[in-house]
Image (cartoon, rainbow, N blue to C red; front, top):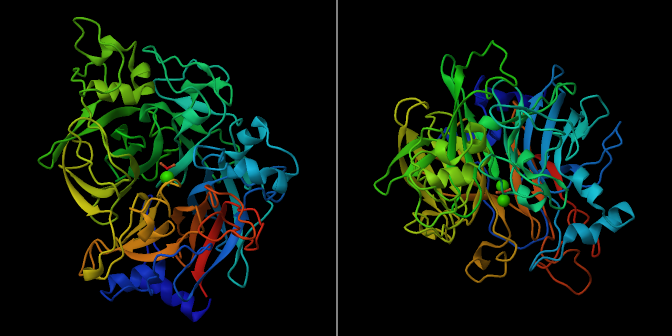
Length: 565
Ligand code: FEO
Ligand code: CA
Ligand code: CA
């Protein structure tokens, strides 16, 4: 092992890895030592590349359309969450990559998937192709002597998509026929018991979203499937291809951005989740079983428990309200929910049973007075003090809401006692907005994915929507979407330093790290989503040719490995 590599490991110490948290070793270590930023921050830019600080480079691991070695499958579209799981050989590991959606034509967007598919695949895309583009890629990686990670042919290298076999736990879907497929896979979680949770987000793009008060969905949408089968948190075992993934229905059905798991020996497990829609809610699942690191948890720990939705009071206190049949009705003013029959006072009198309540979690939460929020994206748990950080990416619109910031905000909540009580406090930890020159930091807008390193520094990626990016004058100062490093303690606490800038019309997503923290894995999602392929005579920031870089090259969503060099 090279001397430099050993130094990085020594810096970090052992056993600092946490569930759903990671760090870029040398960076985290330097910050921990109280020094200034361990990299030279970049400035905002509209360059059509993944721009990194001096001394860092990136390698592409997989691009959309790449044939996965040893399979008949391909790397899917719009890579998002990543998680790296080690294997016995220290040169090897498994990288899990979510694929969220395909970029079809929308108002203000060309439909870069539809535009580029014929160039990449040789024929126009069919719905069957779209169903293969979403889901999850599992990549067996091996690191070469030169430090580069490459995908290898192995039984571990495989795909889950909108047609893969699935099973279900909990109160819903127990009688579902033909349950299969996962789609709109946004963010997720690497669990302490070494499985991965993948979250089904904007399923309304593919299937009908509405269900009735018995929890019944309808068949239809682009994918012609029963909408009640999607919108869940799905557990899979990256290191066991023979294990069928499980949709954990007690974690609720909504537009799941992500899930963050807090697991401490001898205590129930808590899972925090956000429903990424305007006026969506924040949720917490608490397991019935207590976590035992040596006991089998795969598939079972998240099967039984209780689901609650957050109420944020304006005075900085908050409470978790259970989505249970006995929950009293206290409907949020003006919110969407089923009609309340005369004389009815509890959720259980509106819905058929608990399965129906969790299947219609957004409406049921409105019925019990959960707080409408400004699009909760990622939620992560601080690795040292266990407080919960939530990226609210935009404003809310509901009557009397608490989310007026156009640029989004990061909130911090602290549970009263452990994570199984009903009360908490909250604060606005960091507001999005223009540059903060007096403090030396860079401002950001539209925070999306969050990741902690072991020293408690927060890594924030942004997702300014394509129609605003480099177009809306309130957002042009931010340039392209990016990634920011924000310490949570010490003199630089709360100051954002920019570490990366995305190619044009892309967002960065899903940073993760192997245990040695020499590499950061990162997804580059939807380059060219607004204007598509950049051709001669068109200038950045309109369109993209990333990663090829030549005029006319099709933009390709990809996952990359960032390292020093
Ligand atoms: Fe898939 Fe909410 O970002
Ligand atoms: Ca996201
Ligand atoms: Ca997003």
